[in-house]
Image 1 (cartoon, rainbow, N blue to C red):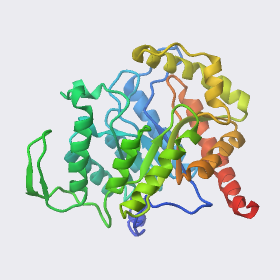
Image 2: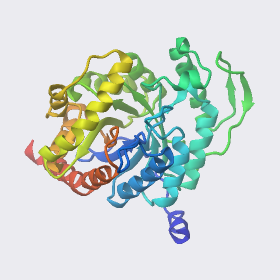
Image 3: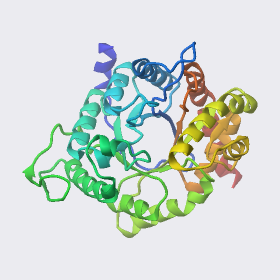
Image 4: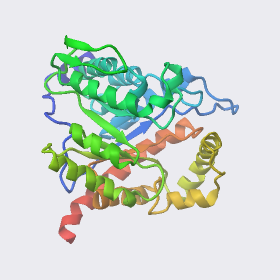
Length: 371
């Protein structure tokens, strides 16, 4: 381990790891919320055990050559990860090349200065592999937990993003707002080595969020968890158009969606469905949705849907379509789903890296010749 770490220190850091990639390239990663699965007796596993499993899953992702591994933040019983940066620091010691990011960090209920400090520290310890995805979060448990008022939902994110951007510049910070005391010329440490901290903004699908992301010049992650990915084309176009109109440098566009890979389409659908259904109906009951069934699932899993489920060939075809319809530079598959077993998640990650990624690369390489 010490030899690997010493060797990696000689590798130059990328000047901009969030820049757009070539038309025949797509970067693939995976992410998880640390969903709590069941032990052999059907009892939910202890959070501690699930967290250790996440590290094992990241090791597989690194071994099969995936580009990135993301860990989401939640504060509820069915997800084990509440401190993504700590989990990612553990993963950094067990992996060598894979990029390490949050998916997402709920900036609205956090301290933007501490977010920067934690991920700058992770970046140093991982030899430049850290990145943070900032978002408002579709779950709201963190707001009352940390004493925030949901009535301030928009204002909290806007002010904290403004402060985070100033801190990220690694220059003295002068700032006033309503969410905390002002700052006068303070520096925030540690600084990031060789570049600014790679930072994305996660967007669920509102034009205002897209324009705000472009106004800061940050790369954007489209969280597509329902509907047809092609319907998000106006947001991708708006993002790139706004960057250009504001004189900002082009930035990468990533897509984040649920998925699962097995040897065949039938196997993937049958293994994933009961876990998807349980999660969908649990969250649906909390949010006032009607119950789901097989029809909704199969519609979401078909070639036009938001679930990237199937054989390596089927999943690769859906990923390649994202390049054509959205111009996506990266795709990150959320591979965990409720009580989906650890062993099946490990196999899905392995197939995604060893089978899906090469298929995507081959098909993208062939596309220019077909035009």
